[in-house]
Length: 393
Image (cartoon, rainbow, N blue to C red):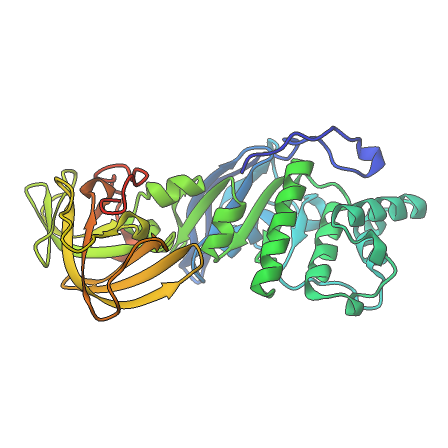
């Protein structure tokens, strides 16, 4: 995400600091084992000041355990956590000075909104008048200063989560940790809070480490994403890098929707089970799978030939779903069901009628399939380029 420049404001005013003023974080060789079983294995991460980094992965992949070790709630089996050049691996959580927001809001029901936000300052011995002033400034940041005297039970779920965010920000941490903070909210509210969180991140310039299993949320919020699988990081990159140039089969399948076309590699060429050929120069001979994004596949008009060198595959339309600006089309082929995303202006055959698909072989990534759970890193056969035509996109 691009940060918008904002005026610098003083810490004394309780208002945002300049962008880029967050903490630097380094995880080195981080390991956590339970009864000899690795929950996290050799995690290495450098998070620069002011970055919004998301730890993304399925349940049990190690992302929350990693966040817990950063926060100090879980002791690493091995490795170190360094913040701004200071090793904090053995420092108690309350002495790390980190902001933390959980999925459950953890608000005190008997305290007002303002008193909830003041609580971290009370623990730090801040005077009453100063606590109140800084709490109101934090509530203004999350646009809840008008509800300062309300009790948590009088607020909606989204408002309660914003109170929890204000409480995490009130003592001006340089590093904010967030563990599935929007997971319990409905989609519309979740999207609205994502926009608010982006705004706050841009204004405050703090470093954020955010945990989610929601791919769309990660792509929307993050400067970079670390994709976890079975306790290890599969790939770290920008949202665009992960989607367009995944390094492993797991990342290619986990980030966004994809078509997987299986076949056999021989002499640097993948031949699918139905006979479609695609280059695979970097791969040894053996079983492999080609990944093609739905928006890179086009449906040819009746009588239209595929472009020179393009892949073509015949099938029959199973389903068409209208999505507003796009349609999602499922087409049964000899290589399995292929998903296409197209604009609504394209004339399509009806459900049950035959259709011919086409895509550029440059828009296919080929990976070996010997062990999909712990897939070796492999380069793309070619960079996925923006489509120039629906018939060869």
